Image (cartoon, rainbow, N blue to C red; front, side):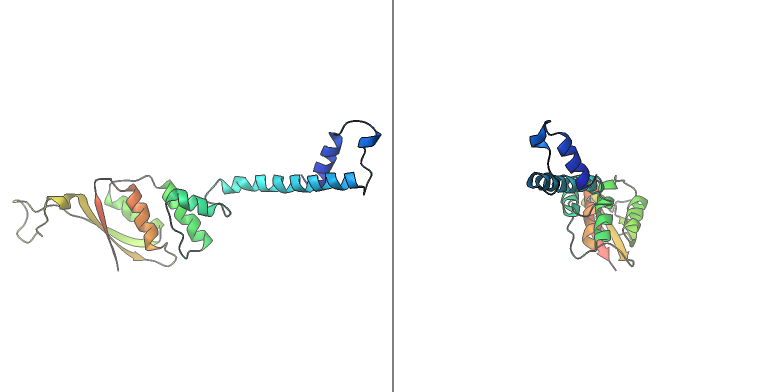
Amino acid sequence: MNADDYRQQLAALLPRGLAWRPAPGGVFHRLLQAFGDTLARLHTYAAGLIDEADPRTTSALLADWERVAGLDAGMLSTAQRRAAVVAQLTAVGGQSAAYYVTLAAAMGYTASVTEYRPHTVESDVDYPLYTGDWAFAWRVRATANSGALPQSALEALIGRIKPAHTVVHFEYY
């Protein structure tokens, strides 16, 4: 609806009688037009909130979406910021190395995951001497491709969805 539509609706809501008929160009007519302008602007803004409710199309509320997702925008473009928010909000987690490699690829990285296991009597002689704590550690080695999100976004996402009892080490090359 435009401002004139709202002005006509406001005029239709007025009581009946000669005193309430706004003369075109008069003060009362201009007052109704001002109210109509304001209502039309609010209508447009409210319609735009539909786009703001979706992180894939948001612009005015992008900073709020980043705060909710626990992200820091840094020096990213708006499209990269949106992609980081969507990736953060839609990631559901997983426990396989392949899941984290796929997740890194979606954020613009070529990655590999190394899992550690403690040295036991059944281990080869050449196997590194990891203690029992290393059973809960793993490493993500990643290379950024063109258009990749910043390293902090990748680390924040993996840190949020990793199993809680594990420790992740990141290595970039």
